Amino acid sequence: MRISQLDWEEKMFLAGCIKSAIMADGRFGDDELAELEELESDLPFRNFPAALEEFEAIVKDTESFWEMAEEIQKKDVQEFILNLLRELSLRDGFPDEHELELLHDLEKVWNTQ
Image 1: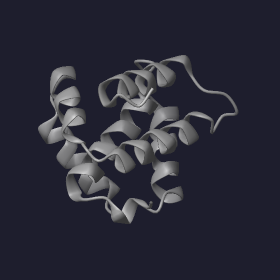
Image 2: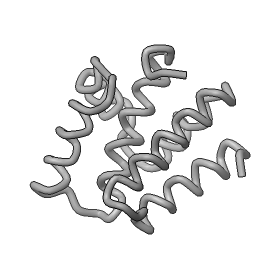
Image 3: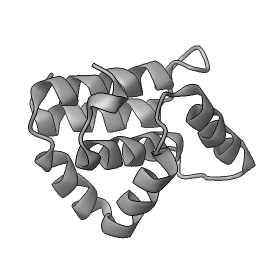
């Protein structure tokens, strides 16, 4: 599966997950902004900024994030998002504990453990 095969809702959620993973430690400074910009250029995700902008307009809190997660019903899309987030968490050579927590929570919501 590729990002281009996702529908718009799935792309929005993926964009939000990517940013959430980067911000999982509770900080969003220059390093995190640089990482987000690097990911934008590395991933074949042409409309990432638009997807993230719409995600942020819709998802205002944790509850709405998890509601959107529950709307992602296709198992292949869930696995694709989880695998991409796992890959991103290993970019520095080892996963961040906060990123792993996000992954585990998504696995629980999607029953993919």
